[in-house]
Amino acid sequence: MTAKHTGKKVALVLASGGAKGFAHIGAIEALEECGYEITSIAGTSMGALIGGIYAAGGLDRVKDWMFDLTGSKVFGLVDFTFSSHALLKGNRLMEALKGRVPDCNIEDLNIPFCAVATDLKQGREVAFRSGSLYDAIRASISIPMLFRPVEMDDMLLVDGGITNGLPLDRVARTGDDTLVAVNLEDYEWDDGEGRTVSPTQKFSPFEMLSRKFQAGLNALSNNYISLTYDTISILMKRNTEMALRLTPPDIYLNVDLGEYGSYDYDEAEAIARLGHEQMLEKLGTMG
Image 1: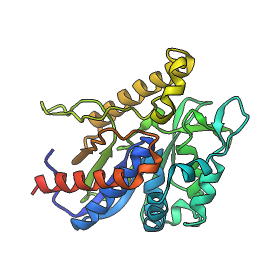
Image 2 (image 1 turned 90 degrees about the horizontal axis):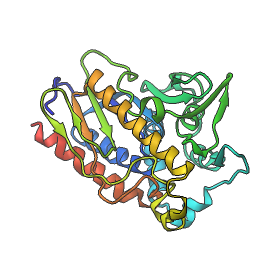
Image 3 (image 1 turned 60 degrees about the vertical axis):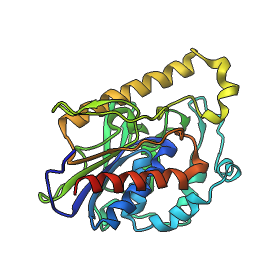
């Protein structure tokens, strides 16, 4: 896709996608290497986590920690809950992040930032542009049935991917910026001008818990868990397709992650490398 603007300011939109979101790190670094200045960010789920940490100026510190994650270290972040609503509390992950980048108010960030979550009580999208950065991130990453929902101001908040997995309409614009979107999906998108983006990814962001545990979950095929995740995945895809049609980005990268899936949290560096390489290639083809 050819950019409509030639300026170096970027309004960056980062999609949801679980561990596939590590590709956002590489994409951001590629933009910076090519001389682009990221002047605003909006993100959902993992896109909100990476985008928020970047806006707070701590991506380098958190990146080193993420790249050092092994299977055992990832398991060490798991805090199971006996709740009937979810498997994990999510507190250990937030504390690990806060230990590297202190919490702050979104409105105090140098880069305007927006995180998207979903309110189950009212069935609506919630856009966080103020308040605690980590409260917003925690709400945005609350994958249904995996992370415990966040109760806040009479809302019950879960993953923003359900309502807006690629929040193109939520990023702040300056008028002379370039709208850049980084997606992590595995479907074709007709941009309305006869051009089709067709990545080769094999896994949806809400695949059954993890490929690593798939053998033990085969018996759950076609039960309510798998059906719920399949339904959520289809909903997310359709919502993102509509978002792309309503607010087409100037630069659109749908990262091809090959065999890496949404729960490969111990493959952060390899996934980020793919985001970096493909963003450089995308920018290179634009001259």
